Length: 373
Image (cartoon, rainbow, N blue to C red; front, side, top):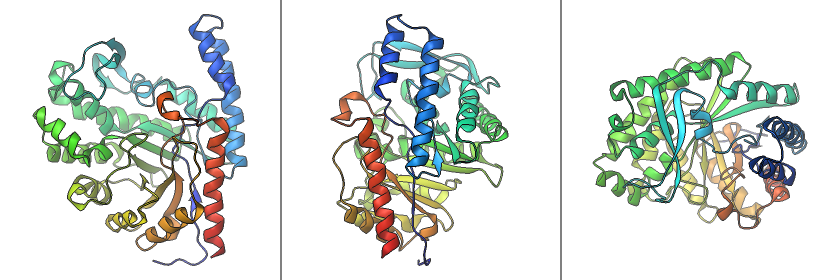
């Protein structure tokens, strides 16, 4: 495909590392040195400066960096009616980490909450951006919630959810109403974050599911239906992107055709406007998977590692984009980091607040190179 004089835009996955000021305030809140309101004031200042800097960096769609979130997924889910968070100590066959962690608990059926805290967070962000940039709200995919429940219950949601026969309907209705309210508040860009699709391409994860009596192909079809129902009949000017990953350090196995059946089903059949897909720069040929992307869908290519400080080569970024352009109109291509910058400490390995901006600048250099060719 060739569209003259069109170059990719630079995009982001959504989260940013917090500056030292916010990290200090979070620690002081834990120690009781400052109040919740004082922490909130620091968050406001940090997000205000962050949005200014995103715009200065050339980003046309900005986020709040998830600065207020403790967890990329559970903070959103806890905003629904019927959900809360508890601590547990024991593992099960599905858990990646058997050690102590947070687990969602239920006080009733999942339902839309008109006072969901993300609504206030979004309007604050929208007010800061004004007319300078569009604002995107990142939320975990409805499929991610379904899988979290299935994995936590060893494939038997009735163990933890009072109405397993309505679980899918409950998730769909909660998401549809939440998306509709975000739109009413002025949101025109929503990103659904998901790790399960990338993991479904991993044979080890498939075996784990099978050990628990769950058929990966059935899971794939259920997730397709769940996501499509959740975004059905959305307004024409609401862009919804599905972000695909395995985790912050693993990239889906785009190069192995034997392991791609779940991901290909997703690309061909999920009714979203585009996909954020991380790629390995050492294998530019893996971008050939975009041949499965329907015409008119946006491809956001994750091409610089958001979890490590080392800088990638601009030539390598350009090469992957050129492979992608064989299958996707350049007008529908963006480039981004592979993941959000707000990674777990054990995976940060030297990444700091300034490095993330260097990574974004590297993507801008790649765009400039493509424009010059």
